[in-house]
Length: 241
Image (cartoon, rainbow, N blue to C red):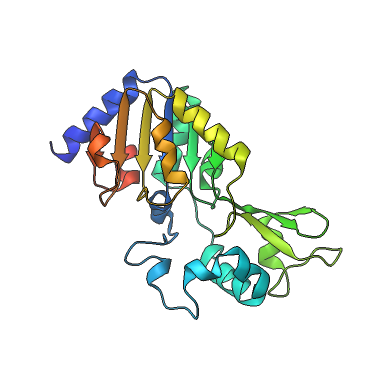
């Protein structure tokens, strides 16, 4: 089956489905200029003083806050990324009543920027930040425009991004909402994720619907279970359905 035949098949699946859930990872946002962590040119392959997985860990944030924020500012919140065709198509499908939820491993907020309403952010969001002392919330602009490297609250407390760092647990409400949405879906479209990060990748085990579609440039552990595999750009594929 060539790429156009696969896109036609995906269009047919979307056409007949009424409760689609999209489960996405870093590959969804790379077309918006945000590097993923595991690809050849992703953050894991760039030279830094410490390995990225060490820097974005809870213990590193607590013990080496200065270096954490130096990396965070330069690599995770730099620039002004915009939604790409994949984000826009998913928002459109939700508006049409076809898509019931987006479950994402990304923290960039691009799904909401594109217009998606029901988004389960498994790993949190750079757009929410809170004071570890008094709990007050701050937006991304506050962090970006703070005159010093380590942002602090009016009360003097340290501000932490509301993102799930290594060594931290996922939010149970988000996890439960994701499970519920996936378990009720008649079609699950997986895109831009290697499906190797747990517990997020284990969520697909709750899918018992009719159509499982995987759009990813590299193989995943779930490929053998999929009705349709497309190894191409997710924005390019989704924009054509």
